[in-house]
Image (tube, rainbow, N blue to C red; front, side):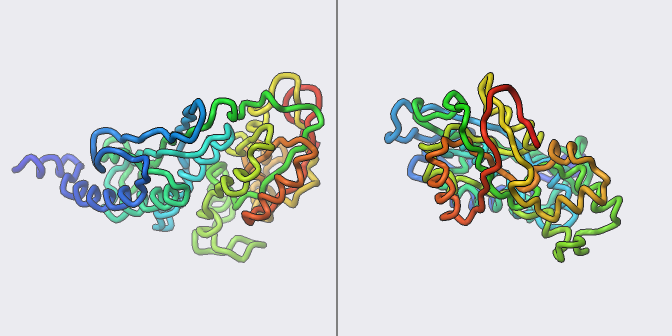
Length: 340
């Protein structure tokens, strides 16, 4: 028995991994920008820093898409969660005023076919191209002793840059600032463990069944791509005092991370329409209102803290990018987030 045969018998198919690697290399090559250096497939990814930024400061973040991958596996549609991953990561560094430069992905699996792996990276590459970001490298690990057959996990790391003086860290936030909420495109990448339990287990639905009150299949609703807010915010970024990406922890948990000491956010829950999906989940799952706001984004994927005289311009920029916004509250003295 050859070495490759022995490894395959142990659960790792080297030939399949090689086939996936060739297809992935094509997707990676499609994302290269003028800052990229080195060869595709090298041991490390290389990138020049842009020269148009004074005192460039790197902003980095690592994240995953959680159990949304289980929906992708259940539907057999693997080309959207990679785009989710990139957009989520772009939003995370946008909070600090940074633009994306490079991305790295990590896929771990038991026995995913080459087509599945290629579809995952195709989604990552599509997200990178949309942001002019180089997919500088990554890792695909076949780990049959760690993952169940047919399962995989997806994570990524983003590297962005911002001028040191332009970086957002919350120190500009002032009492009287206005909170502007940006519409989400669905669940984004958070709350899927609870959402799956409600829709699949408690309501008895499957991916091809329509969600009540929505008229759309469960699979389409749950795989709606996590929205990137870069085009909606970047044109007016210089007027923004702080940003909060509404991910795990919901509105209270994330907005609080962007506020300095002695500054609180007072939010009026009646100022934006909560999408029907969240009402379905709350009613069918018998979830309390407080838990809903801690688990889900409730229709707001990003919140900007803006001085009153800049609010109209910030909202116009979002409208120009096709993103709806609402004035949802103000900054007051105190600490934390108050939902009223």
